[in-house]
Image (cartoon, rainbow, N blue to C red):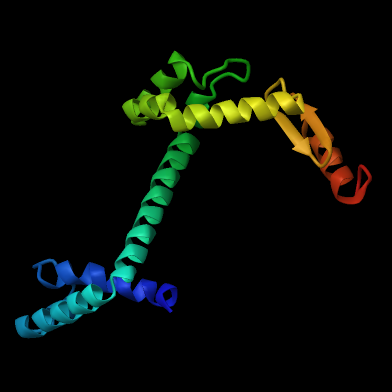
Length: 173
């Protein structure tokens, strides 16, 4: 029930400060001051009597913020991919050139450095390196397709054959 009503609650939460501002939409401005005050009181009372809803809303807001930040970074990478990946033979990620390009295209370099130095990221990278080592992945790019490990830039046709072999047992399905 809570999850189903979450969009309505979210809208109500956003409406409370909006109702009392001069920037309220025309539909909200059509309420008298007394009506806006009553709506605000009802929403606040409801939220106070259902604190679990606030927890759900906060979790949803955090999720949306995280997704929005990730989308912002994906869009920046897409927009500036030619600069970021300027040479197929040049390793740019994780070094000074990558940070310079990140700064040039508007990334928060301080945040990137902080994240890169965090125990969480270091742990994730260590876990990835251990897994790659266990699987024999020693090149970039590397893929695990079905039961096969494909190391290096083998080309689209080879990848298609590997995927087809994993799906239907032969090079062409």
